[in-house]
Image (cartoon, rainbow, N blue to C red; front, side, top):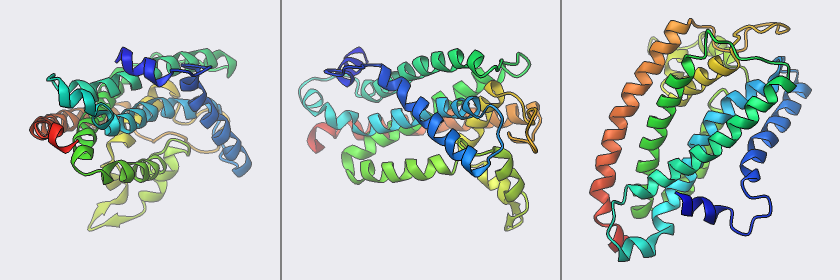
Length: 265
């Protein structure tokens, strides 16, 4: 992982600062758009960063993980080592960025005049565990499948773009809950179908833990999902269990396909 981080910032003047600029630029751009469109989210910088912290771990790991085996083709062909190490380095890089970005988030809290709320912070470790398991499972899948089917790397860029906008990161989650709650498909609420996207629940957990207030002062309506802490914790528990099962399946798939990596690279 240390090698990958060094290579990533080789000949870069700003180095790791680039990892900090990404979420900050997103925050400024989306905050401006929300202001122009009248989004009505108080302390929108904190709201945006609370979701972007989780999303960036997932997107960085997936983008890097899809390429990591191919970019280390010479090593894979010459030396035997557990191939799982390669996608694990992608998780390490994503977590390295996460630590830096979390530090920026904490520094911005007093600037925005915002404080963390102890009564919801316990959701943070649950959300982080769910994020880690799901990201690792998907990264193992992407890294192994892209060796056999190179179209995966191209489809991934499109998938992540759609996935980002389908997840309530830059708009109020409550609006989605309100709108989808009015529709159903085969007798199933569209709101519950929406929750099949694991990142919706994971990011909702981050937002509830870090942004904290469902209906913050100054907002004309709720911002976060209008659910109880118990419901959110139970849903996160389901995501943790299903992500662990998915991780087992993708790990077995990776192990099965890794035997052919040298021939296919």
